[in-house]
Length: 386
Image (cartoon, rainbow, N blue to C red; front, top):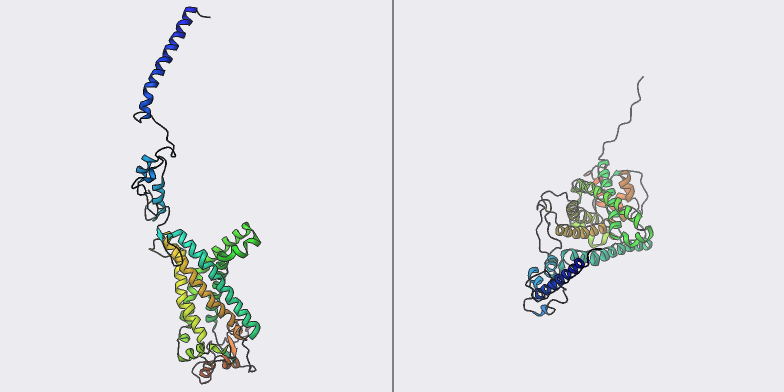
């Protein structure tokens, strides 16, 4: 141990130092409490609790709010929610919405006044999905009811054995290319839009996820094929789909579906021309154009979230209407009319079928205005000479 006198001096020095620092702390405490020096923590619930009653509280900037309620960033998030665009280092050419977390407020048809993302969800979930699905189900139910009560449109006369070429090989290939692409697009679109209601509970999340992923890619690849074949279909069948007065009569009489008496028509009747101009031409342009926007293959277009939302809503409405028209067309061309499918499968129909279902077209053929055989027959192969 050290000398007692040294230990006593050390204890006295320690006591004096402690008394000195306690005095300094006592002197600086009021100054610190007054905010003149030192760093003080602040509780948002303790600092000016009545600040929200001050004039201009709702319009304060984030810096102003921080003075009366430290840590309260409500003004900043209010601006973010209102769609105010901040700063970003990304160029506008690559990220046109950089710095914009939430879209501005809009009111799409069928939505409330809210930010654009929520407005789009309201239109999709409250209108497109329920009413679009109901329309397709009602249409399918009506067709099933009509088929079970009325049956297919039958051919009353007996086949003559004489064939008329209704569709050439080129016309059939264009039609089938378009039909196959449409089926891929329709099935994949239905699964992606409505599949979670009737497939997800059965298949489970993992399998349903893989299925929709595969169908989405098939949808994207079938879209351009459908667009090109649609143009070919339009150019190929335009001449025989020019409307005339006989088509109006056919439509007013409903084609004779309810009366059972076929209404005379040319090569294509009023119903087929309605599908051609309404479905192939008008809705086809809208569906293809909006689909190309969703695929981001339209040059020079700025692809923002609002652009994609509007394109999606237009695409969905036009597609549902097109599907409704084409479902009726598919029904008549398959099980809805006896002999109609054979015409598209082989290209030929019997004279009796032509006379009963397209009387004016048959009369023009018999009068020599239209050739019964438009494709040159393939000459028989010659035997090989040895």
